[in-house]
Every structure is written in C-alpha cells, then in structure tokens.
Amino acid sequence: MPADLFPGFTSHWIDLPDGRFFARAGGPDDAPPLVLLHGFPQTHACWHRIAPALARTHRVICLDLKGYGWSAAPKGDSAHEAYSKRQMGREVVAVMERLGHVRFGLIGHDRGARVGYRLALDEPGRIDRLALLDIVPTVSQWRTMEREPGLYPHWRFLAQPAPVPEQEIGRAPIPYYEELLRLWTGDGTLDAFSPGALDLYRQSWNVPERIQASCEDYRAGAGPDRAADEADLAAARRLAGPVLVLAADRFIGRNGLDPVRQAWADTFAPDGTTYEVIPSGHFVAEENPGATLAILERFLAA
Image (cartoon, rainbow, N blue to C red; front, side, top):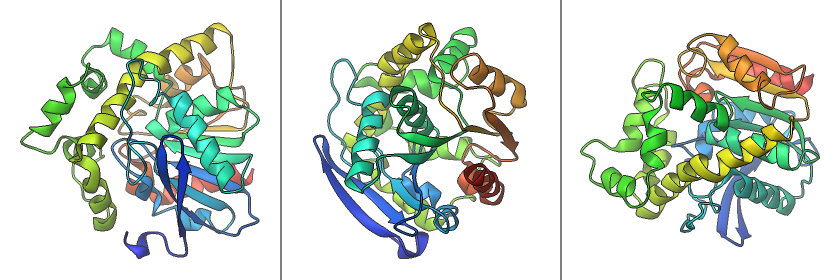
C-alpha cells in the first residue's frame, strides 16, 4: 500500500478463526490504545488524514473489518451471524488483545460505528471512550426507513437474499460502490478522496467474495443487528460514557442535530453524551479532516 498514507505506521496480520485480519498501527507503544473502524464501502485507508495526528498522543490501530480491505472475507451463514456487529465486535477485541490491548478507545464511522456501539453495549468494560461518526442506531434507522420507504435504498437492496444483489452489483454498468461513494459526498464528486485511498477502495469492489461480504453485512443489519438492538432497548441498556456522536450536515445531520440527538437519547446514549455537527458529506474524516480531528482530539483529551 502507498507508504505515504500512514507515515511511521507498521503493518500487522492477525490470524483469527475466520481468517487473517489486517491492521496498521502507529504512535508510542505506551500511549493509550485507540482503534479506528472504517465504514462501507471503504477500508482502514479512510483514516489516513487524521490517524497520524491522533498517533501523537495515542497508540492508533486502523483495522480492516471482516470482508473489507485486506481482511478475510469468509462466506456468510444462513442466520447472517458471521457478519453481525456482535461477531465483528468480538473480532475487534481479539485483534486488540493480540496487539496487547485489553481496554481501549474506539472511533467508528458508518458500519465501523455500528460495530463500535454494539461492542460497547456487549462488553462495556472494554471501551473507555467511544466516538460514533455519522450514524444513528440500527434499530432507529430501520424504523425511519419503515416510515419513509424511499430513504437509504441501499439498505434494503443489499439485505435482499443471495444472490440477487451480488449478481446485480456484478453486472452494473457503473461500479455500484463507487457510485455510492460519490453520491454520499457533500459535493457529489470523488474529489475529496486521495488517489491512494481511492485505489485501495477500488481493489476489492469487484472481488466476488467481498461483494458477498458487504451484502452479508447489510443482511446482518436487517436481522441479528436489529434484533440485538431491540433486546437492549427492552432491557433499557445504555452505553457507558464518555460518548461522542458526530454528524455531517449533508448526510445524517442534514435535518439538523436534533433528530440525531433524539435517536440516540431514545435508545442507547447516556446522559452527558457529546453531540457535534460539522459541514461535510458522509465521509467526515476525508471531506473535513480538520474539523473532525479537532473534535476528536478535544473528546479524547477531556
């Protein structure tokens, strides 16, 4: 991978039951550990504009989630548990333990944020600070889509039974993932992405097992992920603080911060959660790295 994306970071391959996982790590060995989890349809490369700065004060681990980037992309199962955020959270824990970290901070974007809050609900003792970038809870997302079926059509499309979405993605005249990436930016172009990061995203977009993996990720969202959220709602579970929720004003935060704040307050956010909105499309760490970094640094130092 282009070395200049993560200057001073080292590469790590970690063997787990589902295969090999890839991570890059940087920062002082004795600094507080901090794992960064990317979203769909990206890889760990999405953090390249802010990870080096975070590594001045933290031991930063940028991980490719299962099915993405260079990490393993095993087949799914009929219940879609293999790609559930609960299972992916367990894999994050296993990777961090292999790297010597039992308790750590977590910053997640998009699908990575869903892994992050699920892990924090399941194992609250693992996470000392949790930052969730541009999402609302999965249960809230599905309820909103049921009220307004035209919203976020990719959720329903990708969650269809196999092999319907896999086949349609494979024969799409315009690369499906690249079109989503463009549509979700603030200006409707790919200009915000560095060529090196974009090359890494494109590497896996046409690989059949990775197409299947991203569909399984969304099938899990419609099945076990939502079920886990519903169970925690019924049990009145809340995230342990401190928690930061950051929204993009041209994506999740496009109707203002109040709906985002309400979605979290009605579900899992503890009292005292920090809420921020910044001018950006969905990909905040690449479209507005300056504002994203400043907010994260304040949160991590508080």
